[in-house]
Image (cartoon, rainbow, N blue to C red):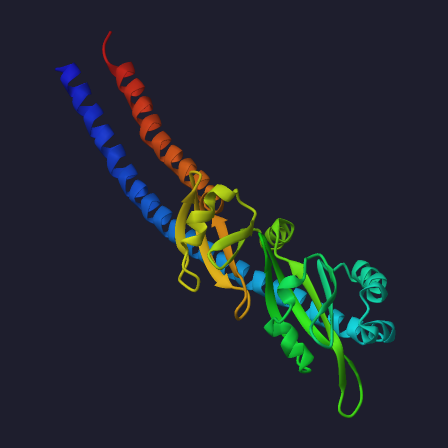
Length: 293
């Protein structure tokens, strides 16, 4: 009879503990789900901010390039050299100016569009191009220059003599490469993985090139989408860096972003487990101590 009563008391005690703990577990589950939803929203917001930051950084580099092109094209020494239409005369100046402004691409043409000097690229692709034609007509032009695996953002400006009307002597094209080095700079700036895509190929990326098909499958302009690369879950967003320009694919690891939340969830689950086990163990010892020997 005594043992039966002790068993009954033990069951009542366990039931009471369960009734006390279950609401807490339910509350923890609700809190965890809400926290996960909030973390996902923060991840999406952070990704959008990273894309906007990458776009602003690209535009800043492009505007800086344009200002440098205008300044160099207006230098009297360059104008005099371009007026000769003699490549050996232009080349020393071009090398000096390119080194000073740290341009990846430095191309000078004469008034007919013939390439006088091409530093950082063959330059043959510029002959007869729309960018050179626009600059020979007195207009500045922004474009992409593709040469093999390389992709360069380029600005082309006229080299002219200020007169009435202005006399165009030739053109100057400056460019910076959208390469792995630039992608690493963008990653440091945005805290995100970056890839530069154009015309169905990845030209640079902070990720391994084996992921290129998956990155190219992302739809530029669409909402953020989930993508798994190498077993890592990312949230990705693809956006053009400029009108008619390359596409930047920006990715943030969902696992890294939600790591803190998982740590909290584990701690809360462990605390709930302790709340279930400890009272039961204490209650059992208490009941056993009251049983007759």
